Image (cartoon, rainbow, N blue to C red; front, side, top):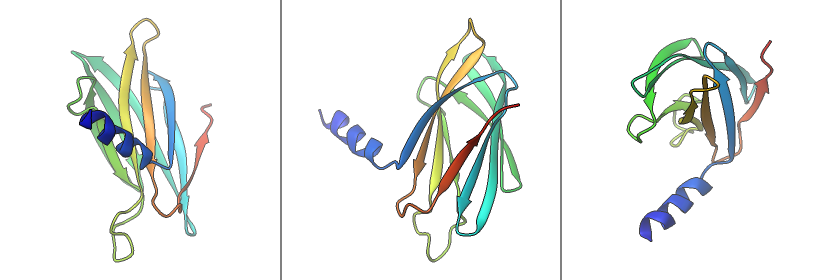
Length: 129
C-alpha cells in the first residue's frame, strides 16, 4: 500500500507527460523554451538487442548515448533542461522512460515526463519530415 501511495505522489510532481513511439533511426525533435532561450533536444534509437535499446540524444551541444532496458534498471534517463545555479536548486528536467518494444512494428514506445516546479519551460514537438 505504501508503494502505491508513494508512486502516486511521484507521478503528480510532473507538469506534463506524453507518450511517443519511434521506429528505428526515426528522430524525435523537441524545442525547449525558457526565458529568452530556445534549445533543441533530439533523440532516436538505433539498435534493440538482448532487451537493451541503444539511444542517441543531443541537447545544448551535448551529445550522449544510453542503453535502456525494460526491466526497471536503466529504464530511463534524466535530462536537466536548465543549467544549475543559485536560482535553480531543483532545475527543470525531462525524464525519458523506455516503456515497451513492439517487435512486429519494430517500434519503441517512450514516456516523456516534464518536471517544472515554477512553470518556466515551454516545449514544442516538431513534426518528423
